[in-house]
Length: 628
Ligand SMILES: *Cc1c(COP(=O)(O)O)cnc(C)c1O
Image (cartoon, rainbow, N blue to C red; front, side, top):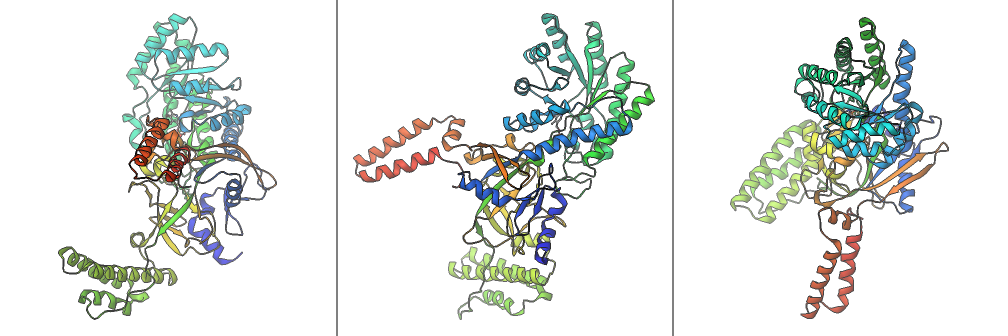
């Protein structure tokens, strides 16, 4: 093992966040480990991409690793089972996957398959999601938990689905919903399985702080809860109320927030039981977080606990509260979405080109240079490691003065170009000093000096949370990690939106506003990977600039270090995205052809160019929306 390899490891913090899934191989390439088979060798991710490329599957692509999904489903179910056995808890764990977090058929089908041995179920927050859930054959004991605002149709479907063997629970969100349920039950004459959603007052920290506690849009306050119980009792349906639900918000960073919330949920559970409600299930919602940064701390993109710890805390807290109140231990339900799917997908794209913030040489002095240009150039004589800040200050001052002169017409375009060139050269020298002498240039200064790497993806389509809520994901080059990165860059996407950039990165020593990268290799693709994007990103994305879905590939990691291609879904074609915004691609072709023929009639276009022009239009409309 050589030192430079360790250096790269350290820079990106892969050992911290990689979770034994993502490692660096001896050849400097990112490798994927199979957690279901820890003895198997890691497989090179660029090797997988080259193989897929040979098969005609191109970047940008979303790569799903089926083994990772299976691993997380096993892990959460086994952690709960272990905790239950260890503390001697009497109830079972009946987890459900919230479809909202990743509704893609390839994902849901696999979750159902991997979850069967554990009686793992599904959570539906809307009618379309219930329709998805009811199209799957779940294990006998699995639950379907229906949250969200429901109309009579939703409720009818949920109630009658019990007749074909589903354990569908309707979670009441309001007294009004209780009225609708009572009405539908009267009409159908079939008994429902009901739940109530309570609003906890404990607030959590983290990104979802504001939507937790009193001001949460969901769940019933105590007075509404009492009203609902009275309504159900009057209608003779109180015996159908089996489940109590609460949800904390997502990505809870601090395990003690979980404990407090579970305690509060237990208070409601014991009080409802005292009221004569025959509850059997306690549903604690989602919130189990992912350690995106690998910091293991209660900060925004990290968590200060493991899945095992979360499960143990939940089981112990509920056991303690129920024993104290003399109540039977309920079956435990959680609706963890993020923690189950985030690690199983990664976004992979290539860097198209770089705008370098650099000038290797400074122009020579000229006799007729403005004196400020000479002053700027003179900095090259005294630039040195111990005077970096001074040089930075001087360079910025002279450059700004020169810009002011240019704006007022005192110096011309060619002089201004010389000034900018000298300035860039000075910045390059400052960067070199900072890199080679290990002088700390502040993160802010580094960002100022960073190159722009133009990348083949759309932030709005593929990483919406990075754009909308500053979500952090680990991002690294997938190759050359045995070489010291010699440049710093921010990433810009392929949309024409200045918001389409990434300028916050997880590094070993914290969050940085620029990413260490390599000078782009001449004749090789420089791949970048964004990890843990399986939760929420896929369907929140939009069609900014009409960049559509990327190619999606599902693979499985084999024990021999190879991989199997399980499924390929081709990304949107231009014709598909046009129809999303209600253009008729055929009509577009026809209209374009008409204009082409008119141009031939007037002699503006030669007949022989018609074929090329029409061919280019047609190839575009049938092709991928990304750079090919
Ligand atoms: C979004 C949501 C979840 C999933 O939360 P995660 O933090 O992803 O685990 C669970 N339950 C409900 C009611 C939700 O709205």
